[in-house]
Image (cartoon, rainbow, N blue to C red; front, side, top):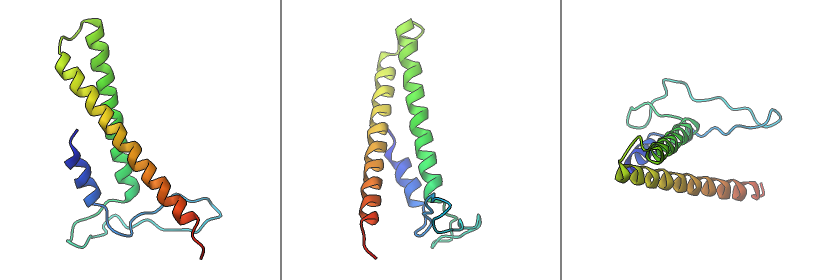
Length: 116
């Protein structure tokens, strides 16, 4: 698993660009304009888009690992090492995703319990 890809994606998120999905009764927020420039003059991506991309990457890894497993089981492929590597990368990506999800839920619960 290439953790640098995730680090690069997270580094592109600008502070203050997190816009959670809220119910219609909740506060209204406007997304950042498409041409918003970051501190270094680089256009940033929203937190939501970064998470979507990360989840898409994890899904792609899991689909690839499953396909390689099926191909190996059916005898279409004899690449045992590549299959095991693909399965392990997908497993690590899923564990990383679950860890991020758990941290986000913990942060949400902490914010929800704050008294204003």
